[in-house]
Length: 93
Image (cartoon, rainbow, N blue to C red; front, top):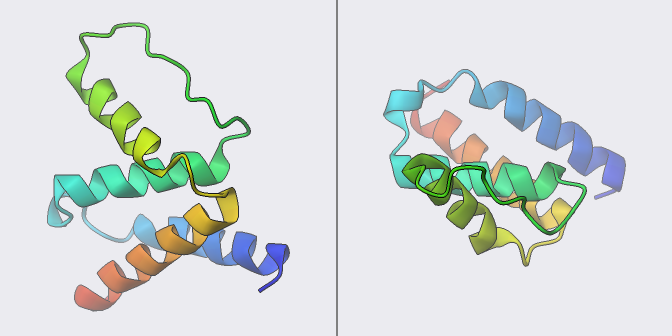
């Protein structure tokens, strides 16, 4: 798979993700997808720290990203694509 191919597939998966009702995706899966998306699209491998460390939602998001920071961007894209396609299939979308 060429880089252009993975980028095109990733963009399509991101667009298709918008078709999936957010409430139908478990929160842990939402966090996994968030982490993969951030790793796939970030130009730096060091996530920025949040302004308010007490913000629990941002702490979970940062943790989700840290869980996948070892992945190369293309690997994160491939995993994101796989999960979105599986969710679409499960929901017959």
